Image (cartoon, rainbow, N blue to C red; front, side, top):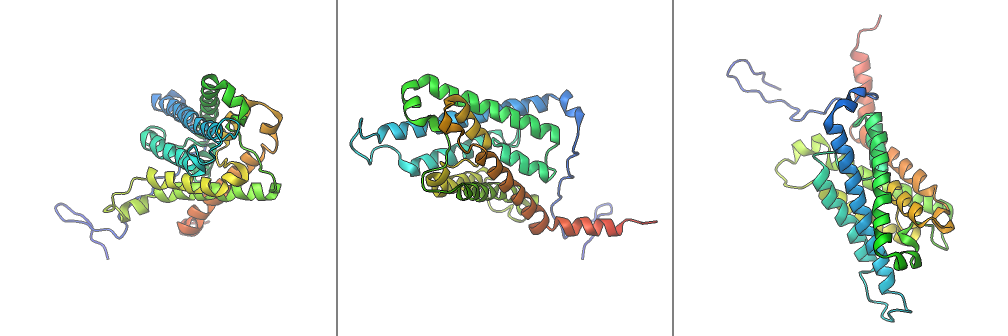
Length: 286
């Protein structure tokens, strides 16, 4: 039962949240808005910083655990520290850029939001370009500061570890990206925000934790991609054969995982298919 407001009467609705309308697939008017270019700059800088800090952490860890330089194999931050670097940077950067660009910092996240009609096709494509360019520049900074270590320790590139099949690598990337993009949808769901408004939880926090947990699970398998820009930037700057071996895994896996997460959240959890069917049935037909 609901009450409607008329004059000074109060209203209480059974639905205390409002889903934003789906974004149009094409919207050329965005090209004339400064906010659009500001968002592209934010995505570029955020991805640059993300790759700079994380790849620098990977290179530093490998140099500290090199037996030729340091016999103490317990030196360095370890896999746990690398995972914290990736997850912590995502938490920080999403928090800083969410109000400007949405804080995607990942073409797979952008792709998932595009499928859910959260962004236009133009914005999605330009975000991906900005993210990839930012990743390339971020890794280039690492190489310029630590060129000797960078070349010696593989440039922080992703690759399929020995003993794992291609199928295992693809599955790891699909599942890892699914966890990330599913968390993004859940953390930014307007229904959840309305229902849990009394719980002071920052959306970037669970997103950062998702990245952290996925890295713990998949670093031994693929080095953890789940972000095509991260994999591309490291491969382009390192640019040796091993960097490009099975590189397609780090595009197909994340995009497939993002698509599955978008479908699961929008059409299963949020019953998007039922809503669309109900809307279709309510329309008059001749």
